Length: 294
Ligand SMILES: Cc1ncc(COP(=O)(O)O)c(C=O)c1O
Image 1 (tube, helix red, strand yellow):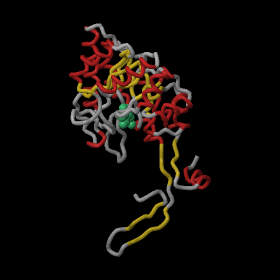
Image 2 (tube, rainbow, N blue to C red):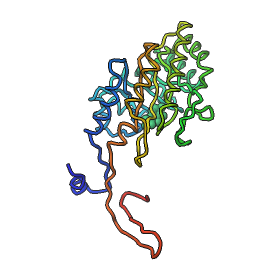
Image 3 (spheres, rainbow, N blue to C red):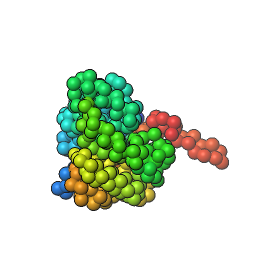
């Protein structure tokens, strides 16, 4: 359908997403795993429009929720509780309560303090919370500093060196069941190396834990894969998946990923109407849009 027809029918400004493009991107990533056990937890923060969430669900995807509202949206879109992970660096008491009482695939734990809070609430609710520890591997994602989350100067996760002790602690808590390790080093990452290194770091952690008798069920490698906004090269999603599987295969552990931008970004456009054109003599020409200050 021509975009101009949609603009004429709906008015502008207007975001339009192509279901076909989204499906193609999902299948390219999903298919690259071949028969290796995996799950694509769509990071709802990338676009929590209901129709998009439902489309990902219908494609066989899973969900990554970052707030109570995203949890509710995921459930309304049809995601089963065992297909939802719950992430977030500052989960509120209400969010912890909701996540624990629902019994999700995993709550991705950000700190020793949060681990305590989840344990206490699980005991109070007579539940066992399935938890995955988010580790901070101190790896530079080589993206924009404001969307880099994997360096020790960033607030996210726990230093990977402290992870074994925290996993032991988790295994000893009545309210917790450690099921996974989680890493997410940033967004709009356009080179493979940092993503491969992060994957290798969590696989190595899982191996060490296995020697100690702590057996994980999955490794959540987060999201972060970048897209091209200006034609500059990016990592091909299939190469990314191959690198993750190459790092993980020896462990046999299931790989979860949390792609956001890479799924929806290239599937969408913003339609806007030119309201005015202003030519300042000998200077710039401004095109004034109905879509904002850009
Ligand atoms: C924990 C986590 N997972 C997944 C994502 C999605 O990242 P992206 O859209 O870059 O794939 C983010 C984005 O900030 C995140 O913080």
